[in-house]
Length: 141
Image 1 (tube, rainbow, N blue to C red):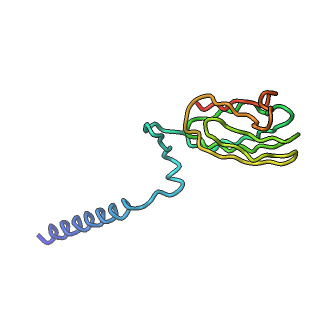
Image 2: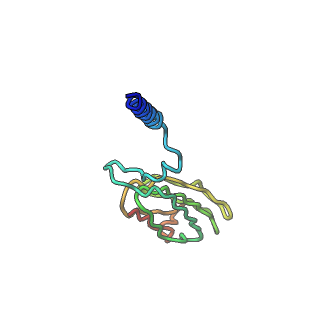
Image 3: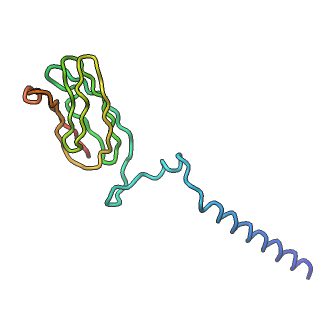
């Protein structure tokens, strides 16, 4: 009879300890490593990649190099724009993002989340530079 009470007491203790451990872990915030394992969702609930995509676009008279950049929806896009020759800026139509006006040898960085799929124009807004060929494309897949 004593063994039954002893076994029952041990089982009750294990049960209470297990419930307490479970409750104490249910309120913990995920660590940054755990957070990265679950991709963020867009407004429709679809999983997005959430990667950081970095590019350098060099501007010269009168072209962008590269002319096309491609990212996935949900990516953070970081573009370093370098004026290699002349005075320029860079404008990204859909995202209403632009660099400052850059003279030769200067650079600026723009960063945004590519939250809309499509093909969007990018160009230099200075004077008639766009008409002279300083334009390109941002593709968000």
